[in-house]
Image (cartoon, rainbow, N blue to C red; front, top):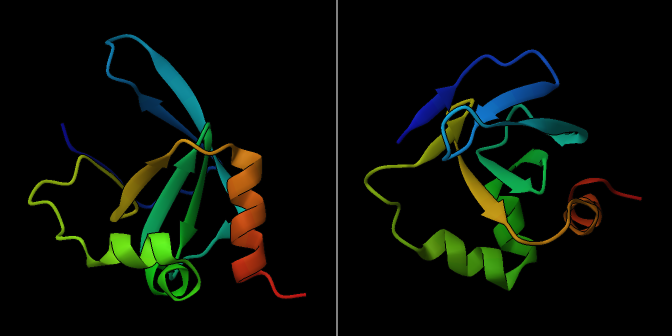
Length: 104
């Protein structure tokens, strides 16, 4: 199943999960949502839009991920960007991304 949510202006996105009639709210992190980003990371109920190349420059894990072939069918898109679900907590991912993208 492929979903494309383009032109989002609200900070809350309702996304349907695998089970029918079940929805969860997904929140954009306002500090780590970059319009020029080309990758959306999801941790718990928070999404972050970031630049894949910047992540690859700072993290071996993301560098390795960037070298993997792109699947023919992308399961989930937000604003045209592929979504990568992470098992880390929202707080941990926020801190990690903040260290990379917000200087000082």
